[in-house]
Length: 207
Image (cartoon, rainbow, N blue to C red):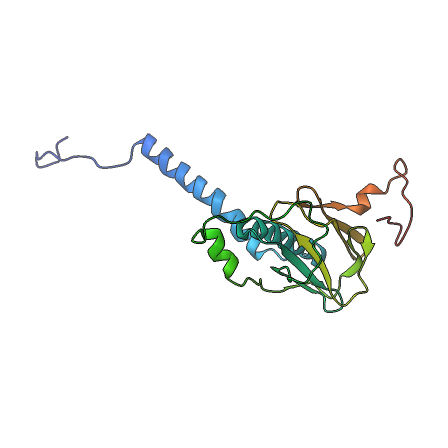
C-alpha cells in the first residue's frame, strides 16, 4: 500500500487467530488463579475449617507413616482444642497393627534418612466455638481425656477414629477407615430424616 508521498508501508496488527489465542490464554490463567485466590480470601466457618484440619492431619499422618516406614499418630488435646501429627512413641501399644512395619534393607535409602529424622507437625487449633461431641478411637470414647492418640501404620492401616464436631446446630463426623487408613466426613444433619430414623443422642443427632 502507498502513502500520500507514494512510499510503500506495511500495515501492522493482530490477526483474529492471534487474538483468540491471547484471549484463550487469559481465560486459562484466570480459571487457575481466581478460584485459588477466592478460596484463600474466603473466610470459612469454624465447623468447615475444623473438619478440614482434622482431615488434613489424618492424611498427613497416613502419608508420613508410609513414607517413613514408621507408625505415626494424630495426638489430640481435647481440653486445649489442639492436635498434631508426630511419630508414635516407642512405648505405645501396637497390638492394633495387623502386620509388622516393613523393614528397610538399605541403610542409605531415603526412607531410612527420613526415619532417623525426628518429625513433628505444627499444631492445629480448633475454634473455641466448636463443640467436640465425640472423640472415639477403636469404638471407645476418649473426648474427656487429657490426651487422645490415634495411630497410623506403615502398611496403610490405622485405628478406627471417629470425630464429631458441632457448631450452631450443625454436626459433622470425620471417620478414619481402619483398613485403608483414609479419612472422610459426612453431614450428620442430612442423615436424620423421617425415612431414615436414627437413635437420638444429642441435639437430635445420633453418632
